[in-house]
Amino acid sequence: TAKLNEKLWQEVSEYIRKKHSDPNGWVKCYTCCNVDHWKYMDCGHALSRTKGKAIFVDADNLRPLCKICNQANDQDGERFQQYLKAEMGTEYLEELINKSRTTVKRSRSELIEMIHEYRTKINSFQNNKP
Image (cartoon, rainbow, N blue to C red; front, side, top):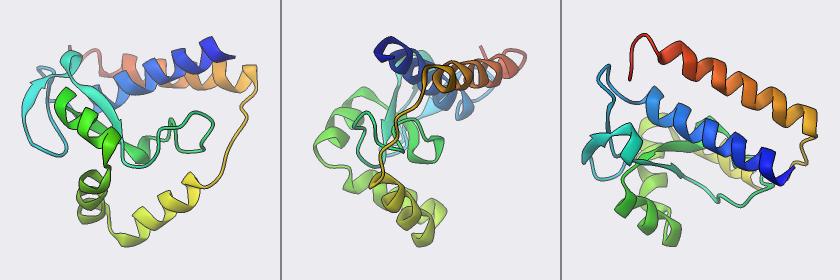
């Protein structure tokens, strides 16, 4: 399942970066507002990205980040969390924090299904975003 978890992360990461991009594929870093093509951006976590955490691939916890901000976020996610709180509200962030305290063990079939669901979402962008 390690390979499936990695494949799932790749799909979720691409989905988040494309979801937030414009029709030409340009996306703004969530924390510094630098703009680059989605292919050159990272997908960052507001809260811990530890595998096994319920929020590891939770789209509510993810936003596009430039490489510099994503590395800084690995050290201190406070800035990202402040932006998320401003965007979505205190209750939203508190729900994410509660989710982050739980772990999940996904079955092989669940991982495959999630990979397929995200690939379908990504494919729906193909007509609008490169």
